[in-house]
Length: 339
Image (tube, rainbow, N blue to C red):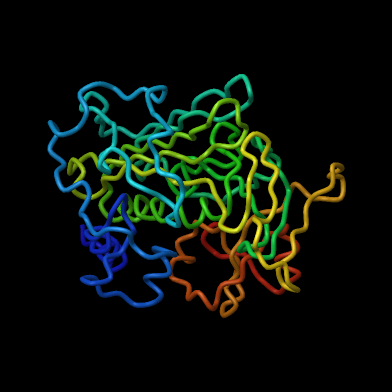
């Protein structure tokens, strides 16, 4: 099947990555400003090509046990939203390869935390109907808190482990964790978009696994491990294994509880003020959603809507509000997912 221009651009960008697709080698890759804004928000650390070999025998021969994953082996966050793990090769074994779509969500643990979400993404499980609300779910570590230096103001999002655009899951408590805006949009979303574009254009399958990584009994994950491998072409189309940091630049987070504060040295001038939730949350709505409004078309979209990736940055307005409030601001729901 003929692939569209946006998918080809994504593949070209991924040839110049370190630690995961999306980190651009500015010395060899040509792109427009809008394309760069869609893929990264920071400078590359390295230009090594990851996942150069996708031969079956170069991948693990024993099934991966998340209990064996050592979070201490992951470097501390240093400005990049994600970093490659295991040479950017996923831990899938040949015994897991499949051409049949499926989804599997781990039960919540004794603390109510999500575990691994595992799927083989195909066009037959991608959403075709309207997206539903997820505001009724409160994942572990959830806090309603706003900062002026966070896009959309709200520090935390209800992050899908397997994105809605891949599986059509809405308010599935086994698939939603408390994640920073930064991890959700800058860390995870570029990979979700990459997989979604590939599956739609090729109608191939992608083995896909996302695992939240907790330290001890912390209610908030330190980050998520994202693995993906395209099946029909054995990884020549999609192949990555990255750890996305659950951080927010400028914000200090207590991962045991989810409580946060501005980091020392952050200028709290007129336009940088934290507004936190009191102990009593009665005055706060749990039905708010994260939307992105297009100032030009006056449509509002879910963040993972394909229209957002085509939107110029200066046309975006980050909204965290109810559907009704978005309409009151003069926006109309997009025609694709009808938020």
